Length: 170
Length: 435
Image 1 (tube, rainbow over the protein chains, first blue to last red):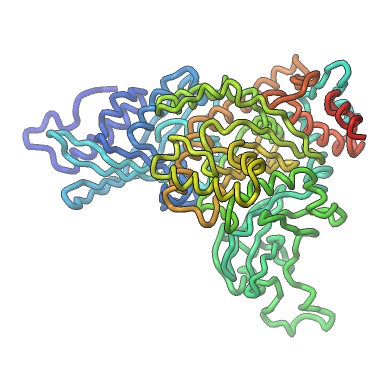
Image 2: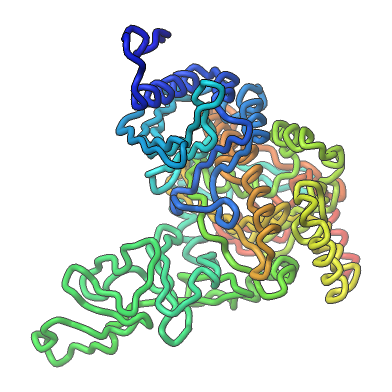
């Protein structure tokens, strides 16, 4: 993948949209390349990663069933597991490709809320399974860098029919 | 001619128990299962708590048949085949909702939430013999519930549910009695499919033998939280139990703790006193021995043919249906006491999703394992799967007695032989001693 920044050749400072889109694309590239430790570094220390169930997209992890509700301790453990040869669903690792579009950006209480549509293809064992849905990224500037403190992936599928699990980071 | 009698080799004296792998790959076997198991047995539909208020409904497929259940304005839960008595369209087209009247969109026939046909546009156009009272929504032949768990059967002559449940009853009681004010299903469900034969998930769900090798990363995670999991080396050495009619249970030490009622750091300091209080309540109510059985021991209970209740760091209710020989649809819910405090409920749910969910640290590897078995069957050259573990000793949870209990009932149904009496020598001897 080319590493050059899409905004690097411009003279003027990047717009908020350019900065946020750049963040989302870089994040997707890290995940597709399985550079998971670098991906973890995009979170703040109080970061959270949530995936609700397919039948309850507004599910609250404290009182409803969700697929994933990771604080940074569990998210680090998830990454360790994905790197382990004992994480059987992802060993050998699947190939993935993420497409992110329809980015909408709001500024709320000094923080940035970006919603976007995603299509994540996963290929493994001669099968393919697309995950379709939308992201909510809650971002903030920290020491001059954009970091995420809340990342939610909401699925549009009715069930994990072809997928069997949410074994990759969505 | 295909003969299901050739699908299992069961010779306890020789220590032989093998299942022919065509049982997992053959379309003919699936057709027979539909006819001889899913059309004959009691099948789990729902928990009563899923529809609490009059008019609330949910739809659900059972053995491929579209059904829905609805609480009528009279407060009674009823189950109906999801098809209009007129020309067949689905009546209930939302997964869940609320209705005083359900109207078929095709010709606008309307049914009350108690199933009566209450509206037929231009009813005068029908002949005099048209009997509206007889055209209400149709229930499945049998519907019964046990302590909140609602089952249906498409076999009008099936035994009463309590008889059918046999020894599984006591274990359902052990689970339900953990709640003071009854259990409820938590909002949100796991819906996923596995590209494997449904019976492989029965095996996997009762199989203590795979836990340590397959779920290494899960225990590493739990260890990394500072929780001692060395007990897992011996946790699965309790006796395996056969409960009759194909039901079975695998019990193991609740080394990771249990919300009711064995505290571990996984439940947080904030819940320590609460869990101790719940435990003390169980001792008061049921005595020390039963309370310990409820509170210290975890269990994976199979209600034959396909309901699993996994009562450990959470309570998972899991049901799965074959779609083709090599594909099943799975749905799983969480069960929790109605009165559970929000902090403890949050921990229960948190513990659930580290292990059991499709996004957890263990279930995806179970999915991988049984899909891998199904893929391996395509090699064909190895005809039999080996399930003799523990056949010549007092079987424990790490053995395969509980799997054989399922398979023997399955064989009885498929072969038409009915109850299969052969059993492991230890069980047989114990039965002889009891007589």
